[in-house]
Amino acid sequence: MKRWVGLCDSDSNRQTPSAIRGEHMMKQRILEQIASMPGHNGMYFKNLITGEKIEYRSDESFGPASVIKLPILMHICQLARQCQVRMDEKIRCRHADKLGGCGALRAFNDEPEVSISTLCELMITISDNSATNLLIHRFGMDALNESFRQMGLSVTRLNRILFDNEAASRGIENEFSPAEMGDLLEQIYRRKFVDETTSIYIEDMLMKQQINHKIPGIIGDAAPIAHKTGEDEGISNDVALVYAPEPFVLCYAGNGTNVPEFENFIRKTASELFLSCGGKL
Image (tube, rainbow, N blue to C red):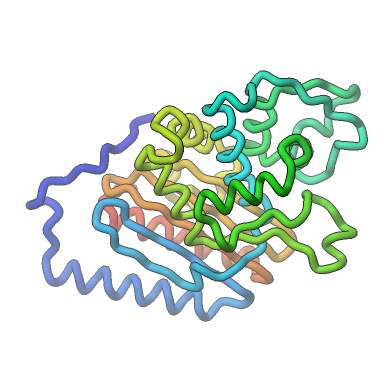
């Protein structure tokens, strides 16, 4: 799949006054639309060439659902690059570890031993919840949260494992902000997360995402998209690095929202922003 280099000469990148007005109107329309939708919703957009941003409640705390799996992956990859863990280390998935929802591990009749690298890929590409909890137990919640802090995340936090209904009944939930996920994705784009090798490894895994009905829903194969989704009852999130001619990061959070309406908003605005960044559908 072709990756855009994101380089434009100064003449082709120069906007006419009418184009500038059109982009301003698009930005206002997007902000008005998300503000009018039910629930607690947020978004973060940044053009990685021009630095232009669109933000709505982007620094607020949201329930991440499976978006929390992105910083978990990044922590593990950082340790692996520092030779503090081997990605071929095997972890046994016991019957008690198998969870409902997304995933493949729950389909095994036995108790397979699975490598950390495979667990990471299952966690990201098909959002396997069993794989995620195995990784949380292996690396530790406190260590993960300390790593998140060192990544510069002040809102994003892992407060419980997935499907911990007892903790959820006490109001204990995981947290993230769209802006913080955008910052992580920008580090990956700029090859600044640990180093180039680590950033590319993470990006390649995000490119294999199989849940593609939101940000890529209209864009489709018009551009490579590295992203991670999150879904739960009343929750729909998607955070992405989109390789338009002018690459951008785009992060949506919808909590307590009308999911079909919000996901339609995601698809439409993602495609509009893609076109505004030089993409063609």
